[in-house]
Image (cartoon, rainbow, N blue to C red):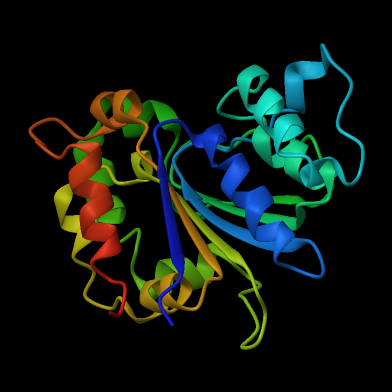
Length: 219
């Protein structure tokens, strides 16, 4: 069965789709995410109280949260509200020391260079970026992968794709498995970040990235 797919503009706008998936689940769901950024800041940056467990039950509450959250706060909100059980975030950009919730885990391959090299000397990073969706990379990103019968969300921020070649992995088996076995797939276009982060000379747009990623879905 092909999973439901929801595409949004900004990453935190996936929250209503995640809450709807929770409505159909007897328990909070784990999420596996591919991203450039870590997206691990505390919800509302501490300026407002965090949600109570069960806040996902009211669509108006979720919508109000989206209007106040920014792109890197929705994981913390979703965990505290009881939507998510854990968040596994695999990144290709720079790591962070700010982890807002104990069930947020950020993974980055050890051989990836600093953000300064990624941004200012992209040719040094290109051979690694081209393999971001390879099965070997994903196994190193996610020490724990979804169990065969586990319901989960697979989430992708399109700004993790820095070059077109990365969309054609030689071994796409694990990426295809993560995509096709998910209860819900969410993609955030993040057009501005795609434009800013893609390697020089690349002409990829966020909608093109999303379309190619979804081409791995089995019809």
